[in-house]
Image (tube, rainbow, N blue to C red; front, side, top):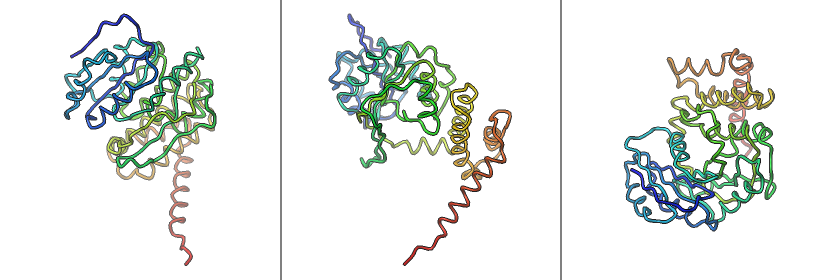
Amino acid sequence: MTNAKLETHTPLVSAIIPNYNHAAYLDERIQSVLNQNFDDFEVIILDDCSTDNSREVIEQYRDHPKVTKIIYNEVNGASVFRQWKKGVEAASGKYIWMAESDDYCESSLLKHLVAGLEKHDNCAIAYCQSIAFDMQENIMWQSFYTQLTDIIPGREFIPRFLSLQCAIFNASMAIFRKELFAAVNEEFLDFKFSGDWYFWIELCKMGDVFVCGRTLNYFRNHNGDVTTRAVKTGQNYLEAARILTRSYNQQLIPRGVYWKAFKKQHRQFWFTRDQYTGPLREALNNCFYNQQTTHLFPVLLRLDAMSKFIRLKLKRKKVRPY
């Protein structure tokens, strides 16, 4: 079901709000988008067959002049990244903002990020800093950058900020050039956990990154269920190993960075390895210990993990002074 409005003006930005069962936060999300002090944007709302009262919240905005399309899936698509694609295909803007439905932002987010992309034609992505908070509104962590604005070449950004960790850890904190989306390898669409990480790397291969040092985004980190599910299925490890090995094979990260990042993922797997059995355990072992694929020595990975495990055990056994 689609609500399309005739537009005489092509917006500069398409703010896409992909939603699934976030009715409790959806109004706050939509309001924070509509309240931007930058005016040249449209809003596209996608709903992936929510089972809560999301539709009721969404329909309140059907006649808003900024809301150009409302799209309801008839069946749940089970992939947020395929929702991304659907939103981009419906978008008219030069730039895309994936404004996730459980986040919110400052009114100046678009103003600062659009200015960065407009000023620097070779920039593929612009992102700001973000605060992550839990369900009790407690701040869990906050990203930061030492400069108010910066431009980093994309192929330099990958080893520095998209290897040991993903600096753009929340899609709502970034905007990107729509024209580049079609050139991204569609492999990321079937990722369950780390498709955004893969996507940012792909964009960085095509341009620079504008970094805004201002904290303009608020990320509601209630994805414990998502993380738990990813760990239980091993999906987070399978996808991370795949992304890192692919980056190394494409010479996007040097061997030292690859080894350090791969060790980090392997340690986390090694500490939880006993919960995996059968074909899943075999697949995980193959993703970490297949030397032909990883170009790393399995024995060194195991020794590193065991060494870390022993150090943690010894640390816990230390007797505290009276």
